[in-house]
Length: 239
Image 1 (cartoon, one colour):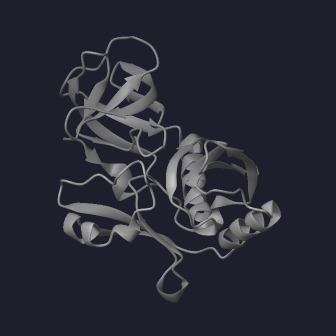
Image 2 (cartoon, rainbow, N blue to C red; image 1 turned 90 degrees about the horizontal axis):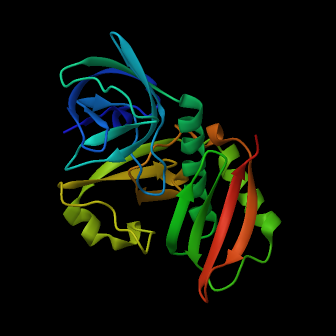
């Protein structure tokens, strides 16, 4: 089982780790990692690891068996053996942009309060698919509302509830196609705003910025029709 350091501190860029295993596909599993594994529409982290006598570029990170997190090298090479102490370092700029886009998509789901049927996160832009019969009439108003929430610099925090509590509060789940991971007794919630200023609370396992002001200005991208009831809405970071 890999300890999820990115869950404890999404701003941790470097950390030591000990190799637990090599996978048949040529990846490595560490006892703890700052690398986020692909999931929930967010790409796996990239970066590098180094150890005495070697180093390796990590192209992406994926989920392995059970609770393992697998670091996938960019090129085949000699892997560090189990028991080896390594130093891991994120491609922080890429990760931070994922965090900004991911949090911005949560804001988009507030501005457009429709059920979400899909989504994707990138370093430059992201998108959500909504169960929304008609596209918004006023694109400028949607973009202005998004940037107003950014400018309010609301805190982004986390909380945890039990599986049973989530089942009893199905309205917390905005996604139609993917249910939050359950079965471990508790589910992580991401909260935007506090008290009377709370604007969003939903299950999410991804990494986020600490405050909405950190997102920076966003631009509304294409709004595409993807079926009778489905509209795909893109947003972009404006830097």
